[in-house]
Image (cartoon, rainbow, N blue to C red; front, side, top):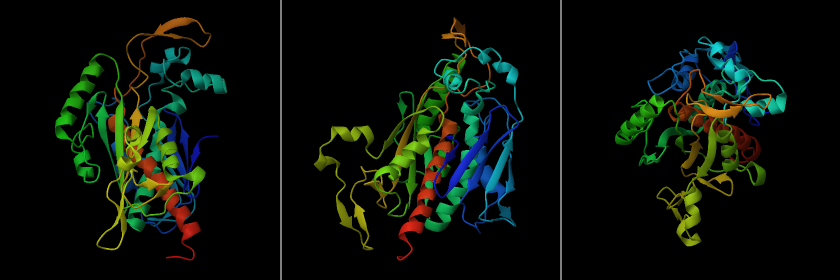
Length: 364
């Protein structure tokens, strides 16, 4: 019913924003992987609310509890259940929204589909659902790094019309985490923070672009036709709340080039590896990883819930207005970075297991 993602490395998230807890069931994780709650917590802390002056003030420790699938610090190969209890809930802030739809929010569509919804904080449509994805992504990241040396780094590239100049091939996690907006360009980060603060004072919101690079991805990941690697990456990141656009490599800018300008010419490096002189393909050709860095971009819209009064309707269709209450990010981008990284990790880990299962039986 849309709550499970992946084939061999499968995750199912559960829980609502202001319910008792949120979490994830991970099925298909290989046994004997050493991983601790502390390693998972590092990623959850990057995602949690209340971490800075430009994020939602909701105070949650987001402490993870591993309920199953682990023994003596190692995975068992059985389903892993991870839960995070909700603590700082204020359902009363959302009473007006129980009958009045927020413009551009999932309120109206959830009612249209199910005829019922948990209106407290957005329920299942809240970004709080992504806790389970980020927890599972921490495990996927460790598998990828341990097996293949894969490194995944996401960062804020653009907020509204402020775009930072960042080299995806050299950017580091330390640079990303050096400021609260998670833009590794210090000058751009300062301007972005000021813009978010201004929009917050105006009771409004803004969007932007997260760029993410995956390095050392093994050649051959991805499958032809319907399971192309970029197609699964697109599905993964476009399933995130507030996502509205996806690009890989040259993206839409590639449409302005000719074939001779856009093609990534091949060469053989000193170690005998087939490489490309450029990377406009974004590390994927024919739906299959070619060994170059995979570079994607995800566009996020402005947060739908804002304090400014807007025209809307209620459940009966009567026209009214709404100035939404509650605690919400004026810009989702800083906290979206670990979410994008998690979805990229889940896709790559799933395809790594699929590739090993199909194509590495008779070959090393």
